[in-house]
Length: 322
Length: 310
Image 1 (cartoon, rainbow over the protein chains, first blue to last red):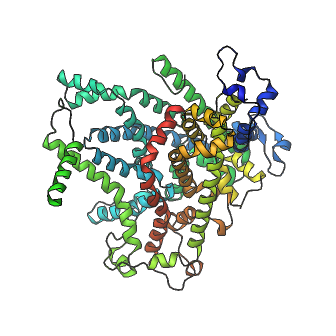
Image 2 (tube, chains in turn red, yellow):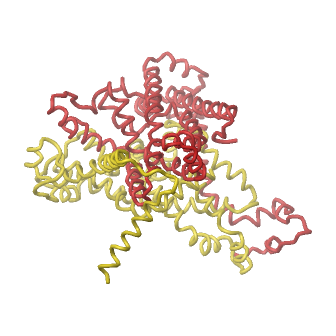
């Protein structure tokens, strides 16, 4: 499509003011119409499937009735939130979520860092590439597949359970045990995503000045000291950035992952906020209250990110955004 | 001639691969052994579940019964389980649905992502900054399950294939990655094309897209994997069992332990249950494992571009 309005912009002219800025709104609309038309489907998509549902959160303040829609449902103020905090099941969900998050933070968060340190220590590039290919792969499997894999190994007749049971260690079915559920979740997360998470740390390590290592070695630092004083400080900004992001997700622990295993261990051990919202809203039709729970979760996560970022700035770190 | 050059080639390769800076101390034998153990451990941790599933899916009923569960290396491998699973019953239909949703969804996602990314990639476009904010704003907050469900319901998408495609069609992160890549293409190419009379669409199709094959491949793979793996949307929005995708079927047979029904599978005699469920499992990972090696070399770069620019 030829664009008659454009030639002046294509000719660099140092004395004239920038013609792209000078144009009136109408001219600019006309000039950019192709580009704007290209944006339409995507922007409409985000409006319908992101911003419109966002406004749907008003049901948290309504006695929502599906046949009335949120235009006609009755406003009830904060009643839903009040009912929610009086619900013991809700607090079970909150407590489980926080516990699982804490375990994940403690055990899962360092896993990609350790893995990246290990991969970075492999000098042979061929071995390193091979190992990277292998450890990234599980990231692309679905949670259904990951849980299936774990079941064939740790389930009732799974190979590891059978082996342990045959040798007098009665572990039974590890997949069904509410006591070890958090550890199970965490090991699944590590198996699936530690490799993928290591990518960003590997990139950060690759950008560390090699001269630092050399001079540290000249000063007599062994590999352990070089790791401690050169590598770890080198990846600190990335570590803090990911820690902040993780903090924002503290109230959302792997929805699909937990949902898939909820039947096996029971709701007492596995109900997290996301599954609570799903089962009470979509399944039981308690729309208002579960939207309230979802909204609370979202707002707390958002506040946590902003706060953590502020703290990071105070401590002289870069954080997630400026 | 060849007997001499081959070892030489190998030796040179080996030396280059283990190039160690002069200041670095040689590794201790104990350290090297430990590294080897860790490497082998990682290979086993990732490889073993796959091998176990493959072995079991190829086993006969008698062999599985004798082993009490799973078999790593079947003595008499048989493709019976795959024959049954692909005979045209429930699993075949689910696999067809998954393939269809993945192909159509990926095509739609890529089209919209490229269009939006290109529309936002040119400097000085009218309303470009607010539109970019609309995209980036989606990072901040997630609408939540219930409001999403209500929107899908209002649009009349319940029980339609659209419910498996539309709610996850665009990913703001992917749009930003593609946009960043487009912006890396030198402006001179745009200017030259424009002087030759090319419009934006011609520039996009004839210049920008051919230069962006790598990033399109990566983002396309991300979308395809998301569609292929998506399970929650189908569970939430699809009640018609004829329209369920493979992941949901896999969940009901493997994780929830539903029993295989000979009639639903369209056969008369069933092989062992575990062999069947492992065959479904392998079917569910096959496309990913098949495509992965070809795209693996691109995606690290793609991911990092996104991480830095976003």
